Length: 356
Image (cartoon, rainbow, N blue to C red; front, side, top):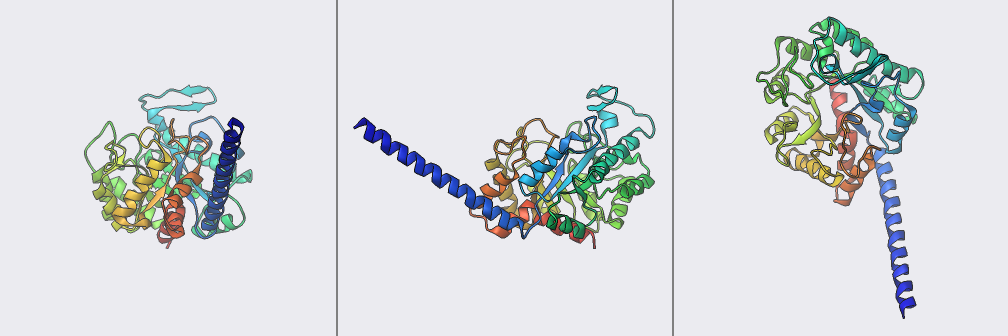
């Protein structure tokens, strides 16, 4: 009798395992099918921690990690306020996290050198420069990962618009105005909070970014700065990575009002798998669903902040399991078009609009 029970349980477990494997295969096939019709994008990341580590380029291992999860384009972001906040490596050792007063030209030089690291990645043949939406499509069709060089916090401009042109020549195609500190452009949403909106120089940068067809990112910006950018910019903008106050009230999150304002401009709100705030991929999709319910599926995307945070949402992890996000959306009943838009189709649409 005991043998019979054991045999029955074994058969049931085996059948369940087979069903699970079949479901996984079906999900993988469906995600690949969606990806054949939509660009999949990571709207904000620091692959290989290239911006802070003492390395020359983004690693092949990191590139492969993105390809394994069907990502076509990555926004590789340089935290240009490092000269003020530390936490980066040099040939001589580590500059610890702290408060610094950099010399003139130091932040600019750090930014330029990090842009060169991205260029080295292109030269070494690991990825290609996403110089335009059409080149991104070409890279996808040829099986290459495309990278958009970006600034996180425009401190590297050092208050000089000429530096924006220099960075553009080095491949910059996206600019996030502020990061961990209020700067010459605007103010931040997190500690140490300072009231105020976009500065006169910030207005000039927004106008020139529009002229150069740069994507503008208002992540980390406070409400006043976001509203000022939306008023001045002729193009839609992104808030690349953060949370939602409606689901968890924390300083790196948007109010529903801010989400609606960004969406009305045609913009996108990026949800990130930050384990400190969003504990799991399941919860992450709750955030995605909230934006969809609030403003529709055309105004939400994803951003990993890969190598920029110490803890990731369960199910996403340090291996950057983007596929888990698409799987969870499918299991909740979202159609292919909605999944495709969220996984990157919205970002690609916005870039096309910015590039007109």
